[in-house]
Length: 335
Image 1: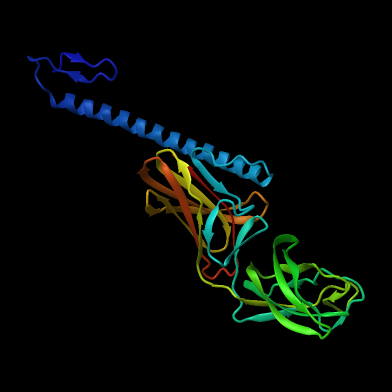
Image 2 (image 1 turned 90 degrees about the vertical axis):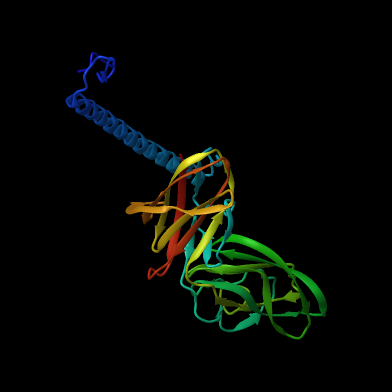
């Protein structure tokens, strides 16, 4: 039998003249097995606690982002609440950004024109705001059907600025050069920058550059808004994705991520050093996102060592049979 034992765990230490006993080996193995099991348990609990802590940080930073308190990316944390497009490098046409979320809506099946009135008359004063229309579904507004004339004399190549508004949010302005004659003009105006919309969105435009001598017609209504036909075409349907802007991060060994959404099935992949790797789905649960909407929170994990460098995410969304899909935010912690 052993003559000496280790100080911490009492493992056998044999001297040259000691005899070896099988019982001593078995006892040592049992002690080591117990110690290793405890160590693994502590590691798992530590990782679980780190996950919870990181998840809370993600929530706090996301809330600050919604409140306009810009803190930027943390050293090992990526997130986006989709308040703007600043963190998006590219996205599918069918993913519409607005109202603090991304919406993937079923597309209309064919081109559709929606007029903001039936009949029209010419104004006796300057009007510059068009009557709003309701978007017929997931679609792209790409053309206007308008009517105009000059009241007294012809004027060619007049610059008119069209400013487009969706759900009371000004999107962009573009200048179109129109010929005004005393004869009524009816023509299409193709948008320089088409606008993606979802079903129910309220859309209108504002004209700048008109005068009492350059008239756009108004509809027969008390609001006297500019008359126009809004022409929508189908958007590309099916699955959609977005890619985030790359961010420099330190070396990491694990990623834990969440996507909050309503409908559909999300997927996540991470790109670093020219290699893209899909994260593994880790379950989903019902919750309420920070703006108060009931949703699903899908979790993802990836165990992979990566050196310091530029990191970007690709977020995919398969609508399945869900119809309209909404993506509220995502967050990822690099460990």
